[in-house]
Image (cartoon, rainbow, N blue to C red; front, top):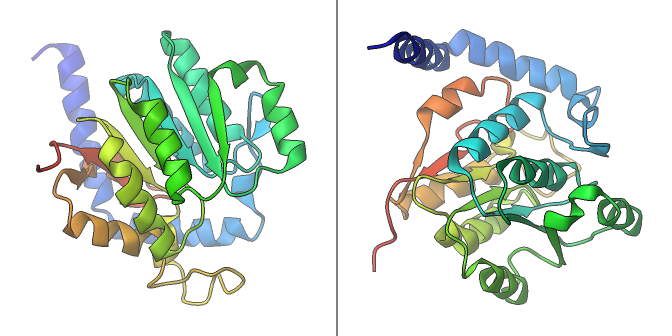
Length: 248
């Protein structure tokens, strides 16, 4: 084993050990709950646009995009556009003609204007409508038909029903050894009633949808190495790797 391989193996073991540290995970969750009071996740931008994600998650997404080198990234939830611009900028670094499809039920005028004048817009396509609407899904499939490597990031409406619908709709498009990332699985770990102003809660959220999906789809696994690394994350257990093709 050469020095680079030794380093990678040491790091892999350390990451997996960290993921088993229950005390650290509890401390991380406590930190997330406390930082949410100050809207910590709203405080970061990418190339001028608010991202509304934890920096840890964005760094991991960067690693996955660089490793997989997709030619299409499908993202549900646009908000201010920072995330789709982040993905587009990664595709720009990789080269080629890769695109990002952003889907949102309500692309607000002021956000659309800022996204459309951004230099990364050349790699972005936006669809306005529900991500589970058949018309929207069909448009995405049409755009994806000639793509060889596809990733999916789910971060729109966080109810069990909606996220499960997204996974059923777009999981089929994810390439072998690529990823579907389910954001805000952390809701299941929050105190019940914490999201009282939203139509989701403990027992009805992205994590519960994800586990139902995995019970019926053995072509995805939870990537334990990535999830062990993601200690401070909005997507605990939500980094799903496609490991085999769908059964015919």
